[in-house]
Length: 159
Image 1 (tube, rainbow, N blue to C red):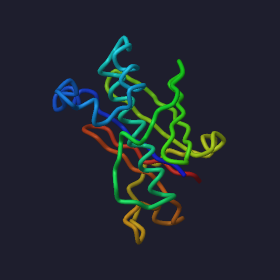
Image 2: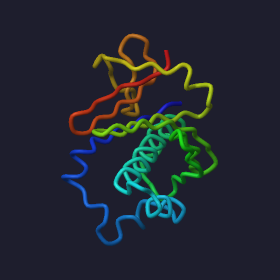
Image 3: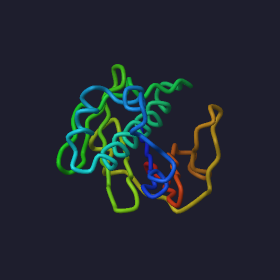
């Protein structure tokens, strides 16, 4: 399964105040908060972790459709210097890759590391939603993941 998320850093800076009281405790584990507090660029780390969590949520929905969202239960276990991550949600382990640019952060997560080799970026809006309301590509009917925030939109899938 695949999940993705994008964060428009310009919009996030304008519209979100992650430093407000209680925000970090609602969304991030103590390990993740430590990553934030020790980061050279704390804003970037907050939105990278958020992007990872959103991506995992989307991938998890594909496997075990569940309408609840529980960011604190999505645990980033490890992030390396290449922004590759290992994430756990309940009994599932996901692998993530994050791209950071001056204007955006993008994350893709998969269940198996080898799945990264099959990912394709789509330039189409030809999709429909399945019976659970999850997006699938119009012609192939294969699952896709769609993310948009501010000026950025990205659609990915396995083809």
